[in-house]
Each structure stands twice: as structure tokens, then as C-alpha cells.
Image (cartoon, rainbow, N blue to C red; front, side, top):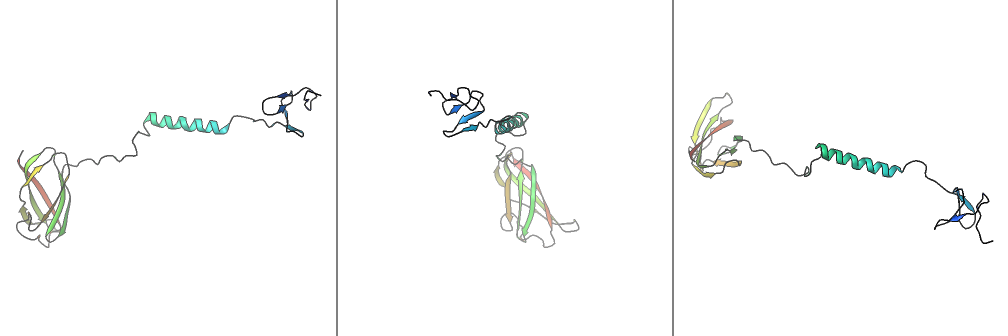
Length: 167
């Protein structure tokens, strides 16, 4: 007997891996005919991956996910004096930004008590070559720019008003 016959009595065919019955329902494992496990329905992994890729492309196209979205966006520059803080009886600090450059910048600083009354007023020395569009951090100590010595003990806040003497 030179031909292989399947359980249905018809000649089997060799598909390169195993003998398969002519009706395609069984395969020969070398000892007995075994039912051929056929997939029923679509491959769910392939369908799931296709949906995932389509969703990612859709989010990129609609702008929900932007290229480079993980990079931190630059902090916008707030113009004027921000973050004023009295550090001690001899030191204050604040941030300052302006739209254009200034070659001679000074600040008129007015200190206020809890009731909102002015308790002191000082003029800082000139700060040279201030770049516009950039936030600068300034720290003034009693010996460096606060010419009248210490900050009044009743001061709880201050307002720094810039003045540009040169452009």
C-alpha cells in the first residue's frame, strides 16, 4: 500500500507538515488520525492590535497627542514684579521681567504694615543691563541696595515699582 488513506476512506494529501484527510477534518500524527483544530472566527490579537494602532493614529491626527508632548512647555514670562517676599529684617527678594531691555534699572520699594499703611520707602541702586523678555530674580540686603538699613519690623509686605533710567 503506497497511498495514505484518511478515516473517510479517501486518499490523504501531504501538506508539507502532516498527512491531512481529503475532507480536511483530520491529520495523521504518526499513530492515529486526530481532529484538525481549525480556528473559528477572526484572530482577536490581530484585530485588537489594528484597533489600537488606529486609535493612536486618530489621537495624533486630532491633536490630542502631540509630538513632543512629553517635553515640558516653557514657563510663560510674567511681566512686572512677581513673587515679592520679605526674607528677614535685612533681606527681600522678588522676580522681575520687562518687555524691552534697560541699561539702568532701579526700584522704588514701599513697605506696608498689616493695616496697609506705608511704613518705609527706599530706592535701590541701579541695576545695569537688564534683558527684556526674561525673568530676573533679585535679592536685596540692607547693605546692598536698601540704603536705610533694616526693613521695619512692622512691614508684612512691599511693592517694588521699577524705573528704567536708560534704554
